[in-house]
Length: 102
View 1 (tube, rainbow, N blue to C red):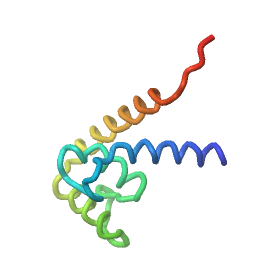
View 2 (cartoon, one colour):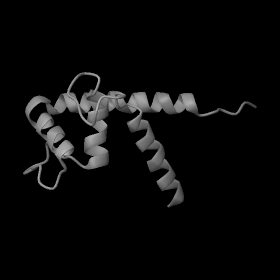
View 3 (tube, rainbow, N blue to C red):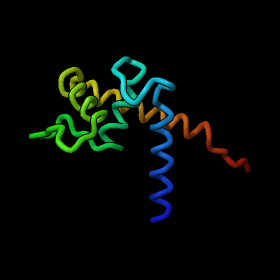
């Protein structure tokens, strides 16, 4: 369980590193797309494309993100952005991990 929590923390940090600096909590420019595509669905729990999905129970920022996803972002685009974000996070993690040499 401890390792799972460590992994969760590492992934949360990787997602946070995608967020544009000094830009607030939410934005819709292309600088935000990778952060938004993984942060809101996977960290906050925004399910824009789920059957009968609503913004009920979301805070104001998550509600904004939900509305943006539902009205402006095709599901395929979100999927592509999530894949790109995962590659960026993986590359960042590879760059931070010291690989032992034999």
